[in-house]
Image (cartoon, rainbow, N blue to C red):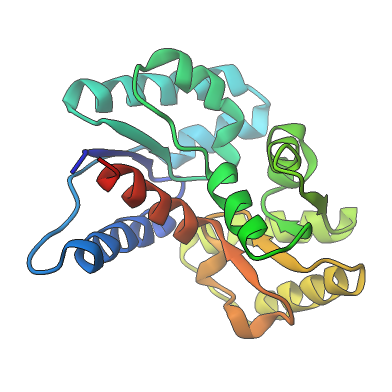
Length: 230
């Protein structure tokens, strides 16, 4: 079994499911008392969020690249960034390490394509929904990606940072997500990507009329496949 390196804490609310999902999948595959070989570097998310807000992605990338190097030096043989938005700085992280970085959008797109879906809705932070780094990565797998209109994007972004990242799960916000997903279905999507690792803590399969693709779960399972591939 290869050792998985996880850059977490962005936020720690969703890092906990990563740890649980990875270990559950290893136990399912190997049985008995088996669990994952895993190293975690959990950052102070307030520092990362300040860089996001200031648009200082170079500083955020340098911070995570240093953490990634530390995980490699500690013995990690593959790396996960436990956040969708911070894949914006994936190139800086990849340049700093000699081990594979498993990109969350690749794992997600493969699952969407395996389900026979070509047009998909994307929910996430404002950065993830509006910037090219994520949408283009999905499009490179042949997916057509639709996002909510500007006002809904702002509200989703607010809920993520003001509520989900702080462990708050409000019924009113769940209703917002249900409405936004229903609007995307009306626009013709065949599935919806929960493109923020915290969204799956708020909504589940019963909240939309089409399949949901929880990036946290898909990313964690892809890591286990890679760790056990040899």
